[in-house]
Image (tube, rainbow, N blue to C red):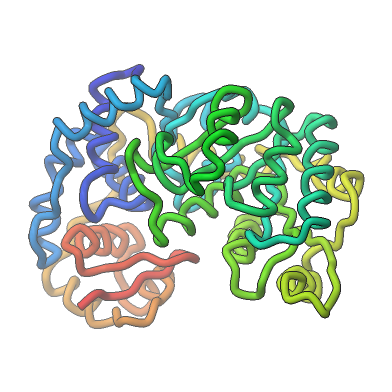
Length: 372
């Protein structure tokens, strides 16, 4: 691991309790290094009115690094040159990813293909053919290694350009029947995981995986999906990130097509072939929308210390009214800034203290809510 001590500390920071991707970035930006951020956690949690969160034990991090080494896997940190620019554009990009296989596949244009686990045979065949045609055209196919459409997309692009983002650890095979496929992707494609080795996938892990799938991709193609499926979550995340959302239309008599038909009705682009997909993503500039964010991401993640301007410490007199503005209903941080009258930096820092104290939850769309 390059920059070994800082990388070790960063891994320890992200594996600590109450530290999510947004909190991680703000802590690094505020304190300039993971070591300083770790030292600041107890005092910040105290000011936030809660107990000190559990800080990851160094032995735990040693064990994770050794497990990754045994798997032949490597860590990819947010400020590494190889970190995909599209993924870094997200408001909550994974601070670190573990990977196996061909990292160069991230340098190609990327398109996600996701859909129903209980997909029809015709839809699986279509997904496989579509993935194969796109891969032959120089596009890397991103999916989640689930049953059905995901599996078909990976099989269609295996050996050419397939990227699997999994919800658990790299050494955990889920679903179990895809063990051989997962092993093949680790050798002939690219396997990515946000969770440490040995992590069994839980329900809460899948939305995080879905954001990576959407974040990595210029566009997302949905093939058969129920109205309340994980595939539609991925489509929503792709739309929120400003990416193309594409859907394959289906019979209104088939429940598996209702999600795709609904997406098309709501503005997703109807596609029927690889040429349709290529036409939409061919001129997409992976860095066009990240020009303004690139400096911000760099500032958040450089190893050198960065001094934020202004006094970010929030007095108890200011913190209490801010806390009163919070409730169990998520509210936009911008609204809190407007109503509190505090500076944006002060509000962000106060929210950071509350989160470290276990009194704040973060939601999509830069919204937060109060935890009892």
